[in-house]
Length: 197
Ligand code: FES
Image (cartoon, rainbow, N blue to C red; front, side, top):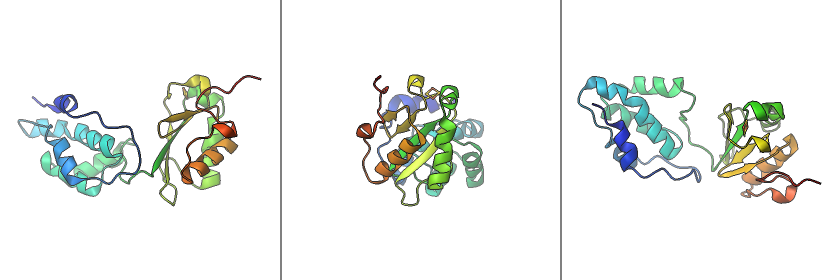
């Protein structure tokens, strides 16, 4: 019987993303040490979970980490890279120092999130999943709901939610994140509903 679940019970919950992280091979081995198996078939079943664990912990899976996963689970690096490129949730490059999610769920779509996506692409030349040239901000468009629809359209920067956000405010938010400032409240973008007039 495979034991991937026990890894979640033993390991500390990964800290919320706080910035760009390099992958430490020793930590990868520690993470993988909890993935035990009895035979080849069980090992194959654990590959995805192991990659998710590494991806969640560091924010990405480096080539060296992929190699370690392959060795630990008796598979090939090609198979690991195949999974990394097939599933959109995996990142094979490090995130920026800040991580921004643009919600593109139904409520946010209805309230204009498409304009935010266009601003990101047109104004900054960044596509979904990419990082600004200075490595400061990684941006991801989320098609699922971020759970704060009353703020739609919603942007989450690191651990803060902002909304409703206009295209202009997204630009300002990105510029401030790049400049090392995360707060936007004085510019009318809040992490709560705007006050009614
Ligand atoms: S759809 Fe965007 S927060 Fe719910």
